Image 1 (tube, helix red, strand yellow):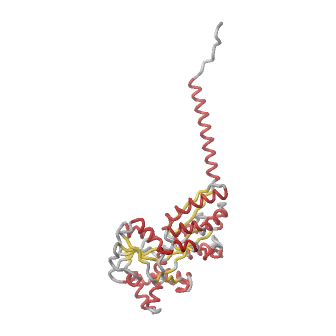
Image 2 (cartoon, one colour; image 1 turned 180 degrees about the horizontal axis):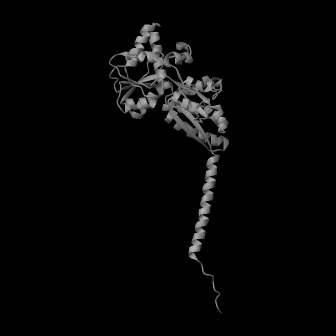
Length: 348
């Protein structure tokens, strides 16, 4: 019996069909992945210059919490720079959902523009400042220049590094802390205060635009005898670059540095992130996050965490900007506006 004749298989044609089918499946999978990626919400947090490492720790924790609570995967992105520069970027169109700044005025300028609620400081506890700090000094091993207080920084043998008060909230706090010390030291004698500030500012060897740049100048470029920054930052720098190579000095009088946060309402609404943005900021007040913040050497408000980290934060008298300068608006206009006291004191 004759065997049936089988059709001839064209290997080239079969290969082409299989290739086309695989390509189609790949495109379908890619399209599905893209669709899922497009559906995944992304929150943008605009923050100050030296907060990169802090939020690199906080953001994954919040993403995990959100997924557990809402069964939704999210992405959190960061934008960092000088606090005032970040505010200007938002005014110019950057679509940040939330701000986590280091100065009240940089949030207020957004409120004045209608991008943040007028009553933003009442929206969250502690004037919408989930954590705070003060200004401290980082000196080199052994503190060779014997720097202990603001008074030492006006000596003619001292070189100082801190960020530009025109562009950095960090730098403004430093300037205002020095001024507040001088007012107290000289019983409000304006001429003596100005003389002190003129000497203090003349010792600055570089005005970087932000806190991270100032750190680079002091640590990597070896400039200056002392870096002035937030207490949190100088402690973190010492931990990163070597506790045997640097020392932290918290002066007996310094300034209260609040770290205000707010939802950028129109952006969050437009991005479909209003609920996500509000929860993100509330998450900063939770006990676990407060503990994480304290681990980064920020002072916090949660009573249990305060007790747990009490030995990390030396007592110091914290001056309040509103008490010394009347208001932030007055401080900004009088000291940092064009032709203001900062400009006058820097004239040779």
